[in-house]
Length: 239
Ligand SMILES: C/C(=C\CNc1ncnc2c1ncn2[C@@H]1O[C@H](COP(=O)(O)O)[C@@H](O)[C@H]1O)CO
Image (cartoon, rainbow, N blue to C red):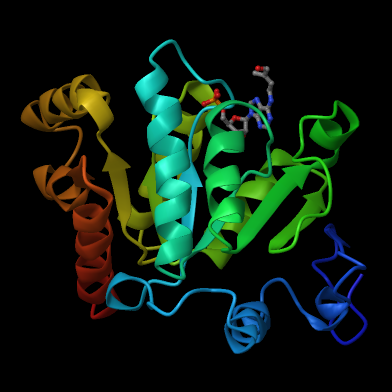
C-alpha cells in the first residue's frame, strides 16, 4: 500500500522493495512514469503523438502460429523503445508473458493488473523485476476498470475469449461516450479480418454504426497503428 496515496480501496499495490520508489507512487496518479523518465530508463523517444500508456489485450496462450508469439515479444520491445508503458492483465503465460517480457528486456515499464484468484493459481508474472509494477484486485471487473482508467488507448493482439471480452468492453464504453480513448487491432497475419468482416455485416443490417467500425484502428505495423491511435485520440478528445 502506498504511503502517500491510498491505493484503490479494493486494490492492493505490490511494491518492489529493491527500488523503494513504488512506495511513493499512486498507480493511478501518473507519478510513476515521471520518476522512471527521470531515471532515464524509459528511452529517449516519447510515445507516438504523446501516447505514453497503452493497454494491450492478448492471449494467455501462445496459439498455434509461432508468428503471434514473435509479434507479441516485438510489440513489447517496441513499446519499451518508444517509452510507452504497457498496461496489461498481469499474466505470465502465453502472449501476455511474451509482450511483458519484451518490455522488460527493452528496459521499459510494465503495469499489470491481476485479480487475486489468478495470483493464487500462480498465473501472474512471477518475481519483482525492475520496471514492473503489479496491482492485485479482487475481481475481473476491477481489473478491467483500472486498466481502462490507466491507459490512454487500447490495442488487441491475437487472443481468445478473454481478449475479445476485454476488447468489446472498452469499445462499447467508447461508443457510449464513457471514455474517449481509441481502440485498435494489431492485425498480424490477418488474424482480425474475420472479426472485422463480421462487424461490417452487423453494420450493414443496422446493428452497429459504420463509423464505429471505421474508427477502429486496424493495421499490421506497430508504428502505423500507434500513430493512428494517437490521431484518433486527438479527434475523440475534441468531442
Ligand atoms: C490458459 C492458461 C492459463 C491462464 N492464465 C491466465 N493468466 C492471466 N489472465 C488470463 C489467463 N487466462 C485467461 N485470462 C484472462 O483472459 C485474458 C486473455 O484471455 P484469452 O482467453 O487467452 O484471450 C486475460 O487478460 C485475462 O483476462 C494456461 O495456458
